[in-house]
Amino acid sequence: MNSVPDIFKAYDIRGLVDSQITPDFSFATGLAFARFVQQEREPATVVVAQDMRPSSPALADAFSAGVTSTGLDVIRIGLASTDMLYFASGKLGLPGAMFTASHNPAAYNGIKLCLSNARPVGQDSGLRTIEGFVRQGSAIEIRSVGVENKRDMLKEYVDHLLNLVNLDSIRPLRIVIDAGNGMAGHTAPAIFSRLNCTVIPMYYELDGSFPNHEANPIDSKNLRDLQQAVKTHKADLGLAFDGDADRCFLVDENGVAINPSDLTSLIAHRELVKSPGSTIIYNLISSRAVLEVIQENGGIALRSRVGHSYIKAMMAKSGAIFGGEHSGHFYFKEFWHADSGALAALHAIAALGESEKSMSEILKPYQRYVCSGEINFTVGEAQSVMARVEEIFSTRTLVEVDHLDGLSVIGESWWFNLRASNTEPLLRLNVEAKTATAMNKLRDELLSLLALG
Image (cartoon, rainbow, N blue to C red; front, top):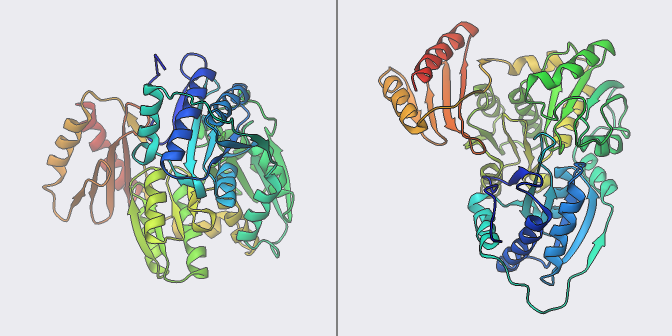
């Protein structure tokens, strides 16, 4: 292409519809992905799925045309959550492409790519190469055009999820599910209708304009409707999915948002009961409680950088059975090392349904620290700011410093991490300590230092 927009990110492709991501761009990317697939000696068929955004069908059509023009075949599975695309890639053993901009506003769209068995394609595992092919332009050789077929995989996807978690004997539960007008409105009815649960649906209508709130549950304002509904309906649990439904956030019976690290701890505990001594991965901004829970239950804990491509690669290399990210992504060995918000939700429902305790009571043992939540800054020079912070803190007693991902400084009962965003021009700060007083003091000191940057 003569002009390629700068929309190849660390883990996917994401940009503004019409001005950056267009059918022409999507066609060129389909050509480039087919070339990459052939270079990697992958199967000669690509699975293509799409979310509910108005632009997704045309972009997926163009991508499919690009792939088939090279002689490769395409299987279109239609409307799907991102984890349903990963399921199709794993089940069929094929590379895949998902058209979605996840939690981004309606003006955006994007493409998430994977190799066969849901292996990630990130910046260091093929995305940079694909970008290069798009920029170079890929000639269409004279050859037979590939075939495009359609396949409905929703039931197979649901069957697989329900085979991974035992929900046969759970007590009756009342659950509110906020689909945020995203793809959970398509997948949730098929999944949760098969459980011993009364489901109160919210915003199930597929609408890429997101008329009720952004489909981004990591932002607390987007949980308010769900929190109120849980209290109004006296529900046992609330679930909030992001736009492509690969992330799930929980609200307890009191309408309190659950820290994703608490859910990581809960699932880690459950998985270690089932597979003692196994390896579990957590990313470095997860609560320290996650590490403690893994070790207390006889597991091997591995600490990862932030980002799905790092966790998936580490899972494959280490044989880990589960991985959790503080951003609400949860990865399962039995799901081809890929992330699934629905599968994480099923684990939470199983734990709740097997117990007479409430969700807040079940999670209380994992709530050992106080965290700041992620605080974002725009700074002039991120590296010099981090160097100044490191210089100040590295001289303190009983402090460990590492650079696995940005700057982490770890004390006896506290830690903080400063890292540059992989997707935006921001510096991100996370702080945790044993008490609210200690956390607030450390956070405020860091905020003062960062204000000077």
